[in-house]
Image 1 (cartoon, one colour):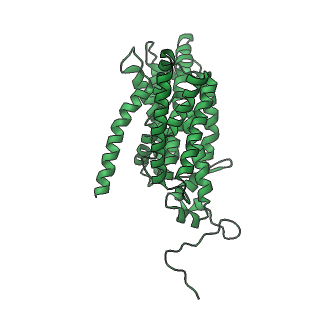
Image 2 (cartoon, rainbow, N blue to C red):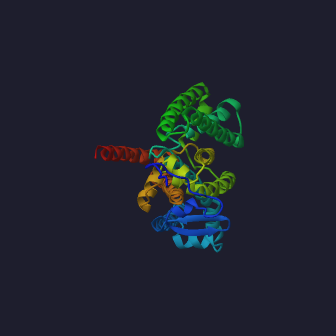
Image 3 (cartoon, rainbow, N blue to C red):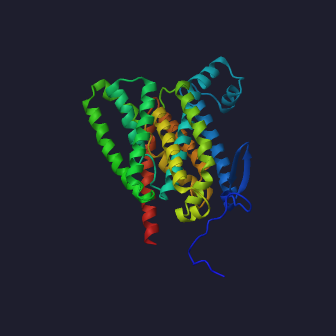
Length: 368
């Protein structure tokens, strides 16, 4: 009889008799939604329900406050179709499109950040830090300042710029696989280079064009309507199930490529598909609201601490992103009322403090 050398993992069968489903190795509650099968741990599920409740509270506050005050009861009555003509116009026509877009964009950023941080195995692996949102901004600026494209062309430019940046970063970071540290370093370098390109485009533009581009680069939900919400919701409605379907592979890949391969996970193919989905999520969010910073960085880590999960949780991260962006937008509208700040200013202020805390926490943990 021969014995297996220690430290050598044997692949488990994933097809045929005696097949092992890798998802069965991840503990939690099984949820089946048609063809979609999910496994959710109990505490992340409770955290997700709490975040849904928090999002409802923030949403009602956003819909009810402003120059024309609407009580929470009247907000709920209006959303149910039983409001007056005035409250219906204020709530459903003026404020609801902005809130709905904030929910969708925040979820996209939170989910994108969760995927990148999980793949990089690093809390700094965020699309706004590793250059992907900067690349999306470059594509949009080329349309705004050089080609003179309309809103649809700007959105396509942002998606194309983010995807092209991700492709270049991925290829440069690939060395018999993509390691998280190398991806972050290459991404930061690409982001710095693209930031200089964006600055050059701004200096060569006219004053009016530069002002319009500067407002877009800050990240804002001001003046957004259903025409921006519909394509963003459609894109994210397609990408969200795709990411969740690959979520079980993502969780197994957090333990290392060798362990994931031993469990039958096609590591490189899964990583490439997840990167594509995460880049598209970040690019769609950027095309809809501009490059809103720090939501993709903070949401997954806050959701992980709230849910008590060992790794990044996808659904709680998406919900946390929605809560953070909608709460920041509410503060941007009301803190200096009647002046309305772009939401990117508020998220940058909050995110800067969070980044200082995160770096100091990681430094202390490293010293211990």
